[in-house]
Length: 211
Image (cartoon, helix red, strand yellow):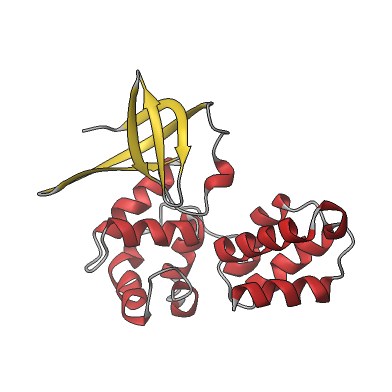
């Protein structure tokens, strides 16, 4: 089985990468929305790999953090959770945030993750509650949305965009969708106007794109 890959990042898709190693390109499924942590195309990337073999497929799932790989394996052990759903879950929240939500039966937070409904959220809590204690816990009483915002605001230099991102997360939008929508609005506005746009106008434009 392939446990890791180190090679040139040749392509970045929505939920997969191509890593070229010794002239061979490996397609690796990667958590969508985590691309900001990847190097630029053409540079070297190292991924922890989980190989999933089925009768009709041989798929590679890649992670920059070994904790993500461990959580991916935990998720695969939950009834009704396959590799694609597990990757969607990890795209929506990091292992420490997932651990807290599961340990505290935070169904509302889990239901915000892509592809997770009430029944799946309940199964995650039931089947994983006693298995997530080795993942770092979220500090004090910080909410899932506010912790997600801490790591995301660095992507936007403009204070109005940082405030808008925090507001969207508090409204319940997933970090991946909120960041993407704000980035698209910034692209449409242009650099000069984006630096001066008022927060209320920015939120109006972004919410319209999310509708």
